[in-house]
Every structure is written in structure tokens, then in C-alpha cells.
Length: 253
Image 1 (cartoon, rainbow, N blue to C red):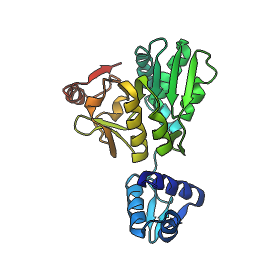
Image 2 (cartoon, rainbow, N blue to C red):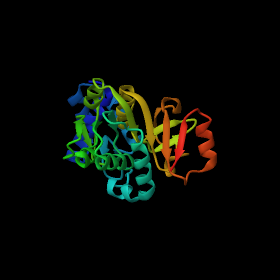
Image 3 (cartoon, helix red, strand yellow):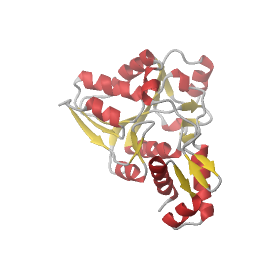
């Protein structure tokens, strides 16, 4: 079992039990206790658990605002970004829509447009948004559910994405800088986003301006991997200039 899959399993156990012990995990996964300690340290750095003497717990861990709360932040700006992103979806395109509150606005615009497309996603809320649209074919990527983002993550999701080829991947990020590139809050999401990028002919990043200039915890791609960034007009001009100098087209809506 690879380290990433083992960490996903550890988080599954934590969600069930609220606490785990290093000795038990070592026996369960047939690895050294020091390996488990490294796993728990990595997961704590990502804000997913709190280490304790001899184990870990979900008590006192860093938290991410619920998806519903994040959806209300900069709602109008996200709606404009989603409508502009629709201009880069042609009739008959195959696209990936990543999980996120800004990418959700693209899904809503696409659903209203009645534009025939195939949509690949790992996000439950996006799949539900598109359900029932006869013009759309929705392909769900499997994996382990992340409660904070309602996305399916892990090695299963990554393996599934290898078999897809799409015109465009519309991705989200929790931070974007010219030096650190595109960043997200944990390595599980980062790995799936990298697989999405590999499956796409072109990558478009959809982020509101509050994400620009933030580094985030885990960098998943340099800016040069992105064809275009669509954001809102609240962005800091200095940050926009720095990103533009990296050779990325950046649109303010």
C-alpha cells in the first residue's frame, strides 16, 4: 500500500472512531511505528488531525469553513467567473469540472445553457447540479469522500482519471502565486488535481480574487501549466501583474 492510500485509510478510521493509536495502526498496515508517526505528522501539517501521545484525534484539529459558508463568500463574483468560463466550453466538448464553490458556478451556467457536453467530475454537489439535464453526460470519478469539499479523492480517483481525455479541465485552488503556483489545502486534493491536468488538453483556473497572492499548503502545479485564469476585478493589480509576467492569460470579470 502506498503512503497516500494508507493516510486516506487512517482518516477513514479517524472519522469512524475520533481517535487512533500508533501501535494499532502499525499492526493494521504492517509497517513500522515510525512510518505511522510520519503519516500522522504529515496529516497534522495538512490540518486533518491532531497528534496525541501515542496516536491522533480529530479533536482540536484545524478546520476549513463548511462548503455552504464558502459558497456565500464573494457569491456575485463567483457567478460572473462561472458565466465567463462557459464561453470556453463549445458544443460537444468533453470537460472536467473540479470541486469548489467557484467551479460550481460554471456547472450552473452550463446547466442553464443547454449546451451538449460530457462532464467528468469528482464533486458530489456538481454532479447533483447537472443531474437531469438531458444535454449533459455526467461521469463521476470514484474514491474516498472528503466531507469538507464533498469531493471523492484518493488513489481510486487518480487511477480513474488516467483513462479520460478531455478538451478542458476547469480547476479550483485555495491559493495562487507567481512563485508557488497553484496550491490547495492537502496532498490528497493536490494529487487528484494533477491527474485532472494530465487528462486535459487545456487547463483553466477559476478562482475569486481572495485566492490570489495566497500560497496555500500544498503546491500542485506551476503557473505555466495553466492556459488561463479567470478571476474578479477585486484582485490586487500588483499580484495580477506578477501572474501575467509568468505567461498566463488572466481575465478579470
